Image (cartoon, rainbow, N blue to C red):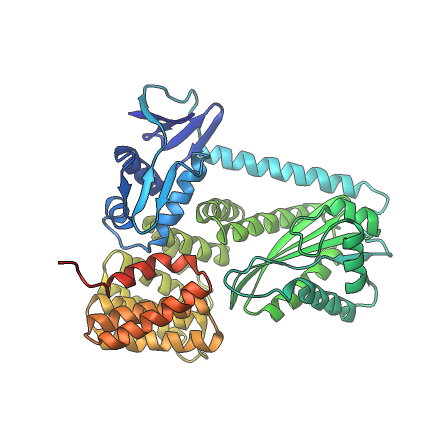
Length: 490
């Protein structure tokens, strides 16, 4: 049976939503959640009920519920179709009626993906052909002038107000010390220029073409930081009058990210375009990977599509496969995750840390599927591979996951030992979100093992910081932990 939801037609058999000529594909679990909402229209359903109905065979983080609900809202093009009721659950309020209506066309998504990629490539070809036909075909102008714009801060749960001007100044200084052949606008010149153009330093969206025209710069550079401590994603966009180059880099610290950003700017501006075919291919790859990484910070489902498209071009990219495997796990697509595991595991030249990370992900899948002994074996193997290395973020995550498994099999002391190791690393590195998450896990283990006072103290510490920093990502876990300490009503 098909359903009309507002102005869209849902075809469960084809897993599509149709509105006129627009056809949207729906992921299996998202479809299952949508059908559950339809069958329970207007009823308020708790997170626990949704997890039980849609993910009964696996253990997934409650974040997957929020992600799937966000995906449904986006698919239906209406954020109000699902109403959130704090501490109660979610209510599906869209108008739904059965219908015999079907889409007039079947959609081959492989063809659509290939067609989209082909169109983008053709667009890039056109730009590069236009540029290559100019008077200066391969050489950069000798009067290159670079304008670094204030750094945009999209880092969650961290107060980094200094990054806007301080980060811009850092990049400018690095560029000036790196080469004498480039002219770089000073920090003072940039601020004055932005103000005279009628913009503010804090403004997130600037008219780049207007700034290029007013300044006489040959390149205007936008840098945006995403992510969190030790896991920063930096988007770099180099704008010139006739072209835009976009790339994403990763960094463990802000200083490292700013230096890498400066080096990337130099590389992009000084890069040779002597071989248009190679240049075109690299430009497209960089742009596609950049979109995948930015979506990874905001929308898991979109990120999956971008990474899958990227792997059609770069099928042996270990980095892309690792990110995609993690996304599959978060979204509960364990069959796809295991396929990637098998492919990665067959590669001959994986680095030691990559092998460890791969085993860690495999352990996550085993835990989700309640295969606790197998999960421990994978996680222990992952930890052993990096045991000679200094303490690392990967090691802390392996310890945390091991703590989860040991809690499931009621080995509480070993669980606390692993969680403590993880907590010590996060406290040293100042990872506030992870500190709170680990304290909630430890609170649960202490409660299960009968140490009520320590359990409550850890819970209150976590609650204080989650509230202070408004860490919405952990609200569900906080609520669940809080229920452990409520006195049952008679």
